[in-house]
Structure formats: structure tokens, C-alpha cells
Image (tube, rainbow, N blue to C red; front, side, top):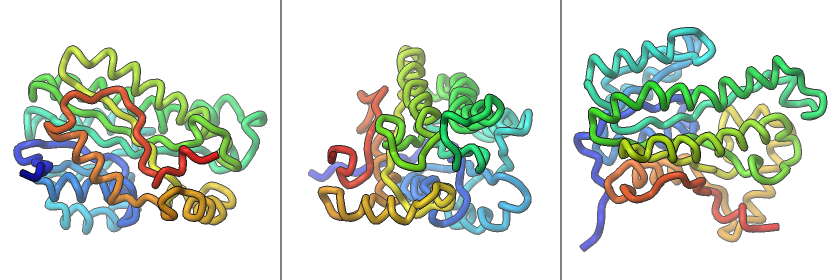
Length: 259
């Protein structure tokens, strides 16, 4: 008998949808197709016209603004979910940002301010989301927290620069959160997609070459897709993934194993 991912009755938050090519949207699609109810966010008024039609396609029950750099916005999202659902089963955190001049410069030349901004948005916002999610997930009897990393957290990737150490911190944070939250039945994973042609990744210098290398050098001779990431996210959120936590899981057609 075939196993199927069934998320009916589960409710969750997807942070980071920018457009149809977003990894966050790939995750949201898979979660919704499996039966989950969603809250999705948009960065600001400029971004809303791009995200709102996608939220409608997803039949999202909540569509809320969330710029984690703005005090109180992330907290307001969780307050709205607490009022609407009274519980929470999962969070998908797909947010990363660095000042562009810092991203394009050497790590050696990064400023304390730029490094702190990148770390706050790309890493500590996940910790904040986990803290806010904890009481709502306890109401649900447990839950799953997912964040997005990249191979550059573990190996040096040309032009990834400042974001390499930031993503390494994110992966480490996910492991510590898994250890701290496990007794509450809350599971935590970092997913590590390979290079994908998303708007966020387009800020990396010579990104087209990175895509070509990934496509030709991976064992499967292709790139992973946001839909691939979504399928893994849905599995991990489901009861089928109930005994897994603390992992960094690659969705890159095997690129990470190649020298």
C-alpha cells in the first residue's frame, strides 16, 4: 500500500514568498496540496501585489506583512495565527538578506554593522520565529520548524562571501533548537537546496556560472527545484517524519557529494 503525505488538519506559516520562483512558494504549494492550511507573508507594500495572487492560489487563510527588520511585525504575525487557529503545526523560514555591497565584497572586509544585519535577518529571525512558535506548537502537541541553508555553509563557494558564515550559523542554530525543543515534540531541520534561479540568489555575483556548474556537475545532471524542496518539506512536516530532527538535508541532485 502506497504511503501518502497527509497534512489535513495541520496549519502553518510560510515566510519568504517573493514570487512564483521562490523556494518558499514551492514549499507552500506542496504543503497546501497535501491538505495544510496556510498563513503566508509579504515583505512590504511594494511586494504585496506579487504575493497576493499567489496567496489566493494557495487559498491562504491569512496574508500578513512581515519584514523581520521592523520591530513587532514578526510578533504580530504569530499573534494573528494564535487568534485565528490557536495552535501551529509548522513554520517554513525562507528568508535571507545581506547588504549588497557586503555580499559582493570579501568577508575580510565586511563591516560589523553589515555582518550583524545579515545575521539578524538570515539567522536570528529563525530563532525568534522558533521562540514565538513554541507555545502554539505545544498547543498542537508538537510541530516542525524548517529553514533554508546552502552548501556554502560547509564549503567555500566562490562569491558567496559573507553569507557562508551566516548560513553556517543558521545550520548550527537549527541543531541547537532541535535539542532544546525536542522534549516538546518540536522537530527542527535545515534544508539545503542547491543553486536555483530565484530572485534572492540573483544577487550573488556570477550566479549563472554557479547554475551551469550545478547542472553539469551533479550526479543527476540537473538542478533541484523549489518543488523538490516543497516535497521534502511536506514529508518532514507530516507524521511520516515524526522521528526525524536536527538534520541538514540537501536538495541539490547530489551536487554536495562531488569534489
